[in-house]
Length: 329
Image (cartoon, rainbow, N blue to C red; front, side):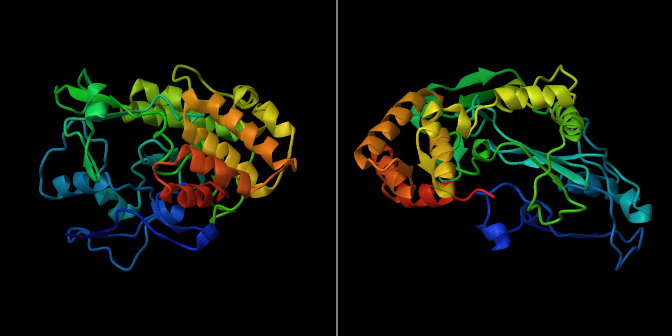
């Protein structure tokens, strides 16, 4: 058997983005190359349409070598896909920690964003407390607690460590800044024009909840995404939730001034970087800066002052965050 696969794609200017991780998980990142040769089937130089995921690779390997699939494994063997393109799943769930939770059936793709300014509650579950670049800090470990076994940890308890609110939106893509996004991949394969269809969104939300349950999502993930896992959504509920959602227009300060496009994006983006516990501090600081400028027009310049105030310990973040926060498509 031969398998060729990648872990993610890479943006090369599409939608004015470069690289990975800091933007929504568009198909340029998520729809990765995948080649599979199974000598028992012999299919070559053909393309299959069935919806597959990388979690199907270990299941496919186990089946190929005649080994049983563990009960907790949610991937599917792809032999039948090679034989006759028979679907192995209706929906695919994907994303990365602390950002959008995405779901697609191949035609529609829905990106569910964090519902709160601080992207909370958000935890890391682990028995190996290491970040990509180093160990968890003593401050992080001081908040760790032992959590009952997750369905796939074979009875082992794990550490549950809260992500500090000031970091919950700071590392990868800040989903709150974008809000929920729904795309029709058949008519908009480049994902340039999100659609507004509350009835369709409700149907996909119900599928999302079902997939999160099937994949043993922690209970707090539903709260982070503003979802009720026991509710069956319809268009009326979607519209009701939109009315309650926090947005740019939710803050009285936004009606007081004129805003350029970048400033609007940076305002809500930097707000979410503050976390739930620093919103009032941020809004007060913003008002002080506007009083000093005296123009009544909000531009990027005001946020350069704010960024230096809130990130005085790391000036390099100022340039990075301002450019990142201004980039919403």
